Length: 102
Image (cartoon, rainbow, N blue to C red; front, top):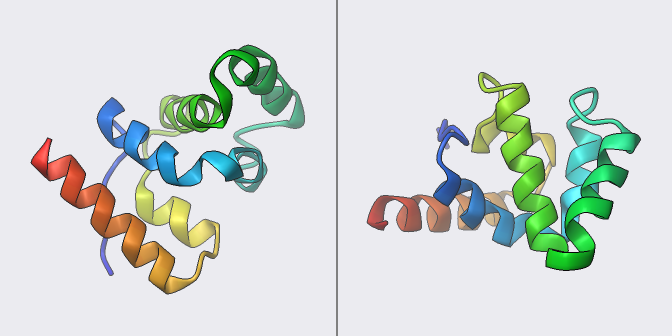
């Protein structure tokens, strides 16, 4: 599977955050050294109480793109998380479908 969709579009980040909302802290830790534990605490204090996991995931992915635009793509994220291949395909296909139809 070749997927190099960059996280340079806020709609794409928003869609991807829907799938990854419950794993945002894990994702932040996997993207170290881009994010430290202090960064994750800041995300939680700033976004979780008012807007929940989805907003934390969205802001984490958005900040990742700001800090590392060359690295921030779906393929890197999904392979780094070592998700099962069927989940990768499902997320990839849904995000691509929704992104293209938007």
